[in-house]
Length: 244
Image 1: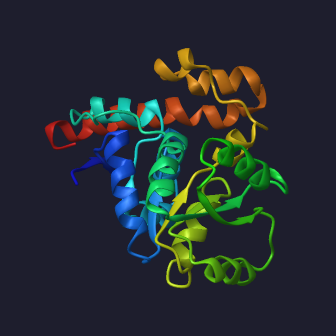
Image 2: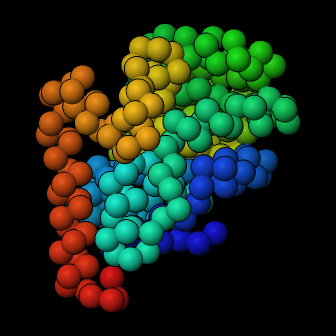
């Protein structure tokens, strides 16, 4: 699959449909493949944290979860096909998993959230094999890994927030028995209904970040990484010229 280098982070140039297809393919390997869904905040963290950059660049699939990453690709003259939100990848996996009888494990968020998310998903996909449920509060990762390995899921949703979820997947990839692991942030909260996703208008015009800011003004500090990231891309482009 074509990768676009944005500064020193590689993003797969895929559509949502292609990302889902690739994830299903990886889920059948049982090789603990990693799928990462960076938005501008995570992409900016990659430039500030060498280990996170290593994690992202070593993943089997990296999709642009955020309009900021898509905008950055256009700035450097290598436009990505479209924004591919991690939540949308997860949601579009379910009919394929159900049809092919592939299992999924929900891991992360606060106690009770994964359970509620599973109950809601099963309303639409009653034959989906949700083989395990576990919240994201733990002290001993070995205990969590043992619980996951007992089920050997084809797909493991890791919803611990960035960069904790990325480090968990990377540090434990040789221990975990799963086909593919997806770092999905707050996706379980959305599936559970404890957090509302932005209305279609905001999604369609790439303004999900603005909607979240209106709902949670305390996120302003985190949101500042979007303009910081885009300005860094502009300066990088200017300094590198056509070789950016």
